[in-house]
Image 1 (spheres, one colour):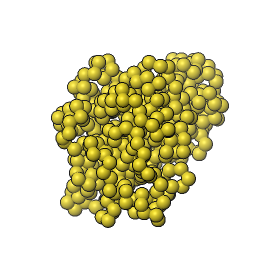
Image 2 (cartoon, rainbow, N blue to C red):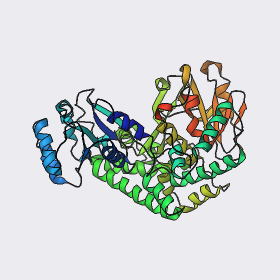
Image 3 (cartoon, rainbow, N blue to C red):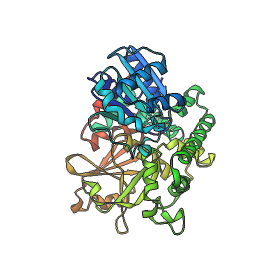
Image 4 (cartoon, rainbow, N blue to C red):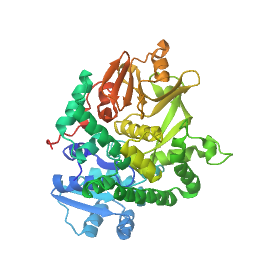
Length: 453
């Protein structure tokens, strides 16, 4: 079983007064259903699950319910399971097949006999027209692929090793060489495998068969394309074009998404909703350009100038030729893998709850990410995939511009922990400790402790 940080969040909901229903959102195949299922089986005496995609009869019957009492009765007869008051979790999966059911949530919560959990794929796209349920009736949790730390747990990295990395980063001391080398190797594996649960499990069960992992990723990418065809409606071709262009754009020198790559006459205003669709579906991560690297960054963000990353770096890697994955895993000098390394960091920053921004001007150059940090100041983050990571002219210029007030630049690279004035060098595998610098401390409320391996 894969250990997920979200488990702690779900258990906290289950242990509360349950005055809200649980809604777990996120992309397809990231472990939403599994996590809720385990919650129901371990924290409730009675567990009922109805899948609206597989069970068309249940979908029709529940849509026809007029009251909460009738809804509960139909759940009971459809599942064949008696309701045990205040000790039953009802999980309605694939809710995107009948999103209007969410309008019943307030009344189901008020009924009080059951705890209610809902989940499904493409919720960010399907719910736009029906989010009419009253504020305060739903506890919404967004799930994403396994982040880097969760991947480490899955492949057997000891808790002691991760704690040692965190301590070294906090004290700005060198990570022991044996840990440094091992985790850099694991990080390269993460670039190829990513965080989709099925891909990670295939890696473990096949004892490292990366060709087998790529087969899983190929199937998942095909599923995402089918979902676009099913849920994007009349904009299917446009959304599909953007999805197809994503890996191509990240290979470019600027890595910024060029709108007319879709169509020579394309304009951002025409395609804006299509980019939002991919974001809401949990498929893409949009990183907007800011005119000034000053908090709040959203204030000067330019929605029409952006980079587009894929939500999972392993699924992005599968879309490139096999030789690219080989180069990443074997740490070859060529080709340039900067876009893929950035994708992994974008995925990690998103998992930590940060909006994604970057900074670029002709005069000062480009800084990969800028993040709203503690004390109202932005923090700059550079990602270096190559061996010459001490060269970062754009970052240096940003840090020496007094009007921006940026006091910290973090360079994530293959190097060890090192401090040079305002620049802090951290190993790429230390990106899980970024909350120390971006949030002002450990994110202990979202950290899952595991036994030593």
